[in-house]
Amino acid sequence: MSHLPVPSRASAPVGAHDLAADVRSFYHLPEGEHAGKACQGTACYAARHLNPERWAEAMRQDPRVYCLGECHAAPAKGQTQPRPPVRVCSRHGIVLGRLAAGGARSLADYQRQGGYAALAQALDHPPERVLAAVETSALRGRGGAGFPTGRKWRAVAQQPAGVKYVVANADEGDAGAYIDRYLLEDDPHRLIEGMILAGYAVGASQGYLYLRIEYPFAATVLRAALAEARAAGWLGPQVGGRPFAFELELVIGHGSYVCGEETALLRSIEGRRPEVMARPPYPTERGLFDRPTLLNNVETLVNVPWIVTHGGEAYAAIGFSKSRGTKALSLNSLFVRPGLYEVEFGVTVRHIVEELGGGLRSGGQLKGLLIGGPIIGLIPPHLLDTPLGFEELAAIGAGVGHGGIVAFDEHTSIPDLVQHVFSFGAYESCGKCTPCRRGSGRVEELFRRALAGQAAPADLQECRDLVTALKLTSLCGHGTGLARFAESILRYYPTEIEPCFK
Image (tube, rainbow, N blue to C red; front, side):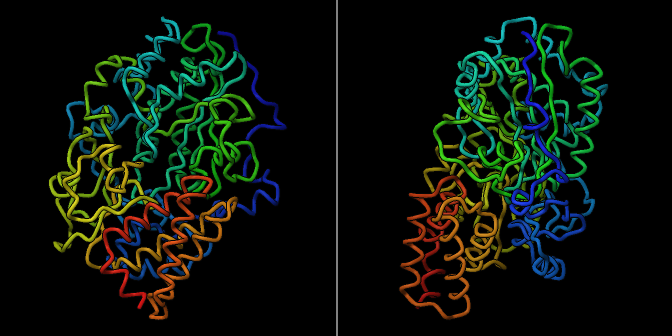
């Protein structure tokens, strides 16, 4: 496969110093002002009573910092925290197995543990073989909606020959989610190998790894890993000594939750304002620099070397219902045993909360649970027996999402939680569509009035109308996710909400 051209410097990704003023104004942290800041994220909100002084410090800060990937030690501040415990609770440590064994930051350690063997194996066969294995595996995206990975890869592969791109979304900013952070810091070559395999399968010769600015140590580790891979011939004009070219570039974001949305992320790489774009066309047809683009999140790509080595059928044999394989989960600091866990789909949420997490460290009553939030449905205690699966959680108004799990105890009032989530939603809205730009801020305002005892019944009806508008007319998952969260609150917690609007 011949080396394909990449964009000229005029259209290549830009650094913070290159940002035009109108682009710079979009971001919260264009110069990296997160260092030493306290976090206002939902996991830290849930744990604010554990360190009230730090939470008060966070609430005084501007710009806001919403997640530092330290949810196991929340409320967090921008400093080195003890690394979370890692436990593999399935027959196969597909995602977290290497982390549980101590990690492999260097190329030498990675190759001693079988690293790049899947890529070497794949390069001896046509790209179709990798593509077919991913399709057979029934792997679904691990970053949110759970779209079938093989279907997305096939869509890119079927585009006419020419410049194509592979992009890894490492803009992990969901509440309670710190899975990607430790995969990047402790097993970086696994992601690099997965991206090269993706490029080989779909016919792309250039990849971009988009990393959130709040993970500075991950950036250091990744730069070193990319240099090692390039020096060893796993990146460059002849990958593994074969006639296949693939290059990979690290791009650092500037602080924006909405850059986790695929079209906003691609515009950010291009150096444009990262506002969400209407679809179709989808990125698989016209994505980065208007070329066919494959975009997956970190955990999705980390699964690929295992699938190539063991086969799609072996992967599809793991899991439950339409949710195949394993899922990495990250539990917040309110659990007795916070940390990273790898489970097979099909275990119940109750098993995760009570057996793995050990219940609440306070010994108090669970108020609710967010999985993959913050803009996703809240799970009430009476639904903890729901199996962990894409369709099963969607049926109760929740979702698998990224896999971050945030528990709330008796210190959280539901109306105050709603105000917190919509404050986050309004702050992080890209502003492209009116329902999200105006509606999220208005819901926050109405709940702020309710908490101050100044609301009326008409205000609650206005909230319901705004939630409907967010659900039906928002341009992306930011607005629709806020609607899902609000719908679950109105559905499961009416006795805590309605008295505030009398």
